[in-house]
Image 1 (cartoon, one colour):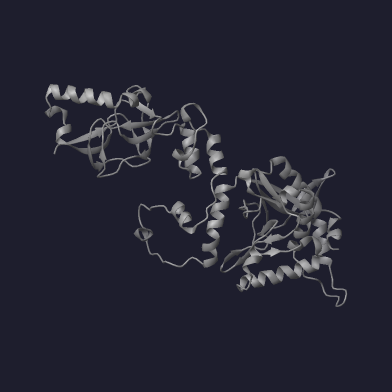
Image 2 (cartoon, one colour):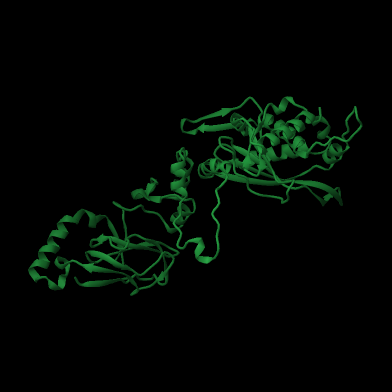
Length: 424
């Protein structure tokens, strides 16, 4: 059967534009007016249709290629009864007449610009290049988003709403489906490799992390707390019986300070797992999650009733929980039912980062390594010990102003004179 090259037609002002989607594949049967590829410029996106019926025998483009008028898209094998040059004039007229009747409604819905089909709203989702790019970055299939504009056109707000209301990932099967990416080349193509099993803890936590990052609109507030007096007080603590210095980590003080802020800002001690019903759960308990780094992966046990425990007791429980996690002796239930989580990199290094919220909580506090800095106070520079804080919060229930106030209160709780109150 005869073959024919399908090339990029006259696309007007478009030149050297990027191919953002290959709609057909080799061996696929296509019909006239079926879309082949989608190209995108700074102003709009355009689908290039086929002018013939046939079977795709060769693809000449890849996503990311730049094309202009006359560039070859693909090659098709024409069907004998579809080669117009071999048909009689009367047969051509008959076919055109039948096609006109069959596609009368479809043609009315097509938007044409300079002989190029821009969009068929009966089949394809309408959206600007900027919105399509935004959806791709979030991993959203834009064809599943319901548009709120005229003719179902999708806006950036529609994409955000779709993400916010996307059902929770409940199965490992669905998680793997969303995460699988087909590689162009195997890793071994470029050198020696080794296949190792992913630790079980990381495999189990991966779907929860993916669910949290996909469904929760994260915002992170970065700030620093002056803990100069707190550190002086902490390092001066001694045992009243032995006279030896107490080894209490800064984390124990941070837990106590965070608990005090949670009491003042109850929205941070909540969950909105019933957001579709317009309900939120305010927790009357204060169970602080602590991210523990183990050789098996990250585990987050809960330090229960932190509001009723003094610094010494919190320090002892932290050590006990950490040991249980590292030895895999922790009860599964102790990893659930938290108010808010603290993840600290102070013992390793680093300053600011963006911690992922531990669902179904609505906020998480990231703590960096404290550093001595020159701070300008009362007209002069003074050496102070500063602690980096990274507060990630769920923007559906907490706004930026509330997060800033929460951080300010937390800094006050970690600041001058408050350390003595925390020790009680």
